[in-house]
Amino acid sequence: MAAPMTAAAVLEASRGKRAALAIALIAALVGLPLWWKTTETYRAALPYSDISQLGLLRLQLTVPIEVVFSKGTLSAEQQRRIPASDVQQKETVLNTHTTFNSRYEFRFRRTTFEEDDLLSLPSLAEADEALQQQIRGIQGSLSLFIIPETSPLFPKGVSVYIGKHRRSLIKLTLDPSLGTEEIRNTLYSKLERVIQTMSFTEEAITAALSDKISTDRFNKDDFENSRRAFKSSLGYEITFTLLNPDPKSHDLNWSISSASEQYIQPFLDKLQPVANFSVDSQILYYAILGVNPRFVKETSSYILNAHNLPHVINPVEARLGSSAASLYPVLNFLLYVPEYFHSPLYIHDKDGKRVTSNAFHSPRWGGIMVYNVDYGNPNDLKFPVHVDIDMVKVMEVFLTQLRLLLGISKVYVSESYQMENPGNDGLTDWELDKLLWTRAVENIATVTTTLTSLAQLLDQIGNIVINDNVASEVYNSVSSVQIALSELEAGRLENAFKASKEAITSSEKAFFDPSLLHLLYFPDDQKFAVYIPLFLPMAVPILLSLVKIAKEYRLSKKEPNKTD
Image 1 (cartoon, helix red, strand yellow):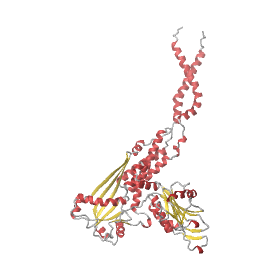
Image 2 (cartoon, one colour; image 1 turned 90 degrees about the vertical axis):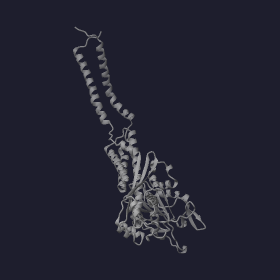
Image 3 (cartoon, one colour; image 1 turned 135 degrees about the horizontal axis):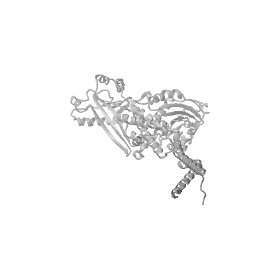
Image 4 (cartoon, helix red, strand yellow; image 1 turned 180 degrees about the horizontal axis):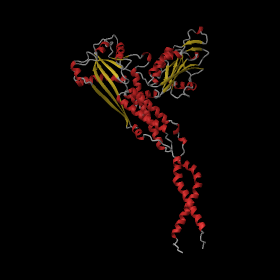
């Protein structure tokens, strides 16, 4: 039988038990919460419900349209029948998550005496410019003037004039016997084609939403057009390159700086609300095409067929080097002067016909123009031949390609339409509005996709830090895209586009924030592998002491109480 413990031993054992319990309590009440707090992942709150609502995109695009009847187009009775305002709208359902509603808000009025005087000017262009001085429409709006058919303002065979601004003059006289509904149908059938020409179309908005819908919604032409233009961006870099593959034969002189300032810069100034543009130029020597042109004996010329054109770009692009260090998309425009022994060189289309401009463009890349040199009499040739490049001819081609690559498509109208040339600006006001409509919608679609993807990513990976900067950018993006949607609904295109640009800027800053890199964080099993060797040696003695104390306590309860 074991000897009874002395008082000193009992006191020491009691102290040990109290120390073990104190250490365990400190570890449980202080150590664990402190460790949990100092190692937890900080995740700022995000507007997940708002982002989820943006996933169901419901757009309403409102176009304010003012219809102005000039003297002689309406009888007194018809003037009383026509309402002061009216609304026409059409909903387009692309899929279960994406729809848009085209809403046209008409406002009808009579011309003023001053406007009647301006409509008596000698030409349509003069009348349009004079009316522009009187009335400057807001971005996204249209002003349609109805002119009587007896007016001498229209040339023979012309019934619709579309000017450089947001105004159209339409020749139409309504029959006095028509009722209110007949007047309405006749008027809208005449105006519909004009509105489709000067404002957005269903096909253009569908193309802007292409990332959110399947390609089955497009016909072949619409799909190609949507893939030709560059995606919406905050900036673009334009590079003009002169390719001289045979410097021993050619001494080329191109005044690209002055030509760009005269022909390209006014166009870019007009596009200032859309994006920022930078322009540079370079000359590459001994840069040859990647294919050998075919010689045609009948015409004593060389040709490049349509199927060879895709192979032309890759060898040249390797030497450009402009896109490597660029933050924005690069639009490349190349002027190629063929070697003397490959001159003249012509480009043929898919039907085997010579391309008039002798140029072609590659979707979302740029364009190439072949410039043939007139060598004159071969007996009088002295190499290198000095060549002053006709920059007017070159810039006309490059400006046309630039318009296509930015999504400004050529409008095809009937012979009864007369469209005013945009002039030195290279872009009319209503063409700019059409571009802003599509860019605003494209920006909104991109933002909603980005925010939805970001929310899903952060929800799936719970140990990624969401710092306050990321949360702030997400909140700013959600707020801006909501403002853009409301401004589009109110018909304020300029404000809507600005808000969409702010939304896409904030969403990209949040999505590409360096703190969201997945490789910066460890999975939970790796965390246990790190912490177990650290805490296990300290935890084992504490746990064993607690187990021993628990056993002794149970044994003491079982022993009978002894009295002296």
